[in-house]
Each structure stands twice: as C-alpha cells, then as structure tokens.
Image (cartoon, rainbow, N blue to C red; front, side):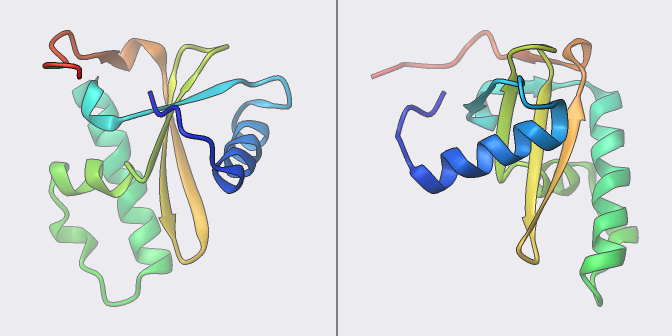
Length: 117
C-alpha cells in the first residue's frame, strides 16, 4: 500500500470513491504488482480498454490489444474498496479517469511479495 500523502492524489481518490461506490466508500491505494486478478477480470479489462481506445484514442489499434496490454492499460491507479472488498483499476487517458471495478471473488493479494525492506 502506498503511504505517502499527496493532497491532489487524496482529492482524486475521494472523487473516484464517490463515483464508484458512494460517499461512504473508503479506498486504499495498492501497488498492482502485489495483486493477482482472474482470467474473467482480464477479459473485462480487455473489453473496457478496447472501448476506451476506440472512443478516445483515434489511430490506436484496439483489435491488436493483448491481454497483458489491456491489464497494463488500467494500472495507473489501483484501489482496494474497504466496503465491497473489490478492486478498482483506473486508467488516466485524455485528462479523464476510466475506472473498472473488479469484484472481490476475481482478485487476491499475491502470497509472495518478496523481501520487504
């Protein structure tokens, strides 16, 4: 989890929380490297990335998007929703945030996080 305090990031997190879950939603930012998602979640991300690319990225080639590229598309910001236990993955494109909820049954924390210093 990121523990730095950035007022702009806090404000953005509050806005995302309000849009994605309501005013009482509490989000905690995570590092995507610490998270594993299901193959169903990957398919959802691929569909969403394709739609965003078609609409907001003229000249992009969404038809050639790989699963890995689709996942990478949505890891600008990753949040754990304390209320639903789900994830929210966000892409920042064209001065907008596009966020996708991942239900709790479609992700988990990786068990081997390596050496923590």
